[in-house]
Length: 567
Ligand SMILES: [Zn+2]
Ligand SMILES: [Zn+2]
Image (cartoon, rainbow, N blue to C red; front, side, top):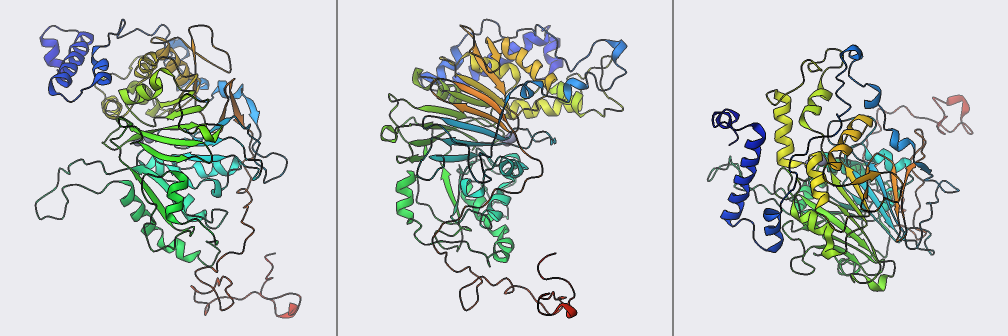
């Protein structure tokens, strides 16, 4: 059915062929028994009244006005700005002094996009990462709890600009192990101990995919199954960072009184005992602790998908499988009960956020968002632009391959490549709209992410979604029968309470330094490389025989190569 020539020869139009192909796939799934149970069956029996709605307005990336096409690429201005974001009020990440975190209400959740982009890199958006804070602790003057979801390249600069230090980035939930979701983990791991993360780094993520290696040979060097899960990932990452961690271990990396492993497992409701992947002492900042999650679980048996459940802070994180590139991708749901005594009780007031990360439209995300008919507050789901927009965007602006007279079609290499990527891994704009139309009650706010935003791409995407479900974008109370949607952008801040959800944009300086480190007041253990007094020894790992020395200008100014005070 995939061969266009074959379908043409049977006298089918392309659209008919797509419909037939969809039917064939549906019946295959039903017949194979691959999908069973009431929720799965629903996906197959649902009738779409208008499966292939035509866009009601052209996407603005395509300028059909030949007269104006001397400006390349078409609609250049609308591809270089995201006007919606500019309309948002500012959020000031530094409250009062350089170390004070902006206060959060005792009943509020704050979601900040530190990265929001799909892998083609751009200056305006770093790769995926979302920081979530819940509630407020008046004793510590900090949020009750906080979480990092994904940690793609470039996001550390945004965390720093938004006044989030490494000490608050100690729980990282990876949705899958693609580079755009984990590559800044190296920076977080390596430099956290030099700043204010003086405790282990916890990395939550999926178990091995279980996908068979097509190159495996009996007795050969290529295994039947790669160990591609989070435990192995952390072991290898920690080993790769050995030179770094040793070199910096003349600095303090550990304090007394860190809870035991059993206590930590209990406090955080972890599904497994926390074990560092290497020989780092328990409690040390260079201890990397994977919490490997069985990616197949989704709560079918109550509690089988809990990654974290903290009855002191009232926060719980659960996970569920999604469909993205290779088995083993997961999405997360964070629920938070302002009254921590209610933790886990769906009938008590709480706030909820879903981050599906990257996925095709699929039923687990849908059902998590329906949430047994209670809905969720914020639903964050990825979206991808259509393949021929990729083709347009990848074209050389000075010498466009495609344009009004030669639009990219399904035969072009790049359209074919991006179609494969889309079909194995991502949610097309219309697919996103359809999925949302199936979620009742609707999320209070839906956020499309992992998406290259600009006026042109967002207006096109909004149009696609509106073909399936009435949505509006903006800090508004949506009209009756309409729900609210937004497209994420770096430094977008979404503050959620029972009464309202407000979008803001972070007001940052491009030239700031990392937030000040707030260290424990207790005395630290001696660093790994220390002198006889227990003080850190910065010379323990270097050979000084060829060094050009500085001097103390106050005592020997006449024998001074250069000042020792840095000036
Ligand atoms: Zn991915
Ligand atoms: Zn991705």
